[in-house]
Amino acid sequence: MTDNITVRIQETDFDIAREIAGLTAERSDIGAVVSFTGVCRGSEEGSAIAALTLEHYPGMAEAEIARHAETAMSRWPLFGIRVVHRVGRITPGENIVLVVTASKHRQAAFEAAEFMMDYLKANAPFWKRVEAAGGTKWIEARDHDDAAAARWTKS
Image (tube, rainbow, N blue to C red; front, side, top):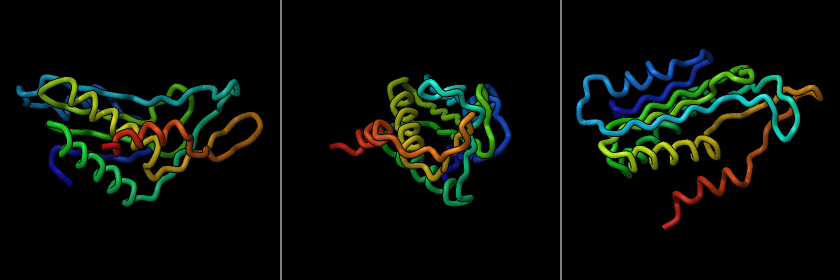
């Protein structure tokens, strides 16, 4: 993995400010930092959610995310990318995922962060199960997530 790419999958929460500081420490050439934090919602399509449980294949998930981060680093003029994704049981209001990109200019940082999130939503090797009053069910892939990810492969 490239020195300026960090990918972590963990059960514990993360500190957004600490993650940004870790990516930008001792750098005076960074002009833009974009961060996206995904948070567990308390409802979906009008139904209350008690929790999400995320599972992954250890080793494979980190490698796949890092591979996409390397693609972003080669596609945009970035100084670094940091991705932290949680697994395990996550309740409404808790953080799920963080993507941070750093660049000299904002457009590259914004586009790279969006590219990474579109990949994570549509193709990253995670499995999500939702707990609600009616029981638990696995969340299926969504067409709009696939469409968002596909736009990055268009010529």
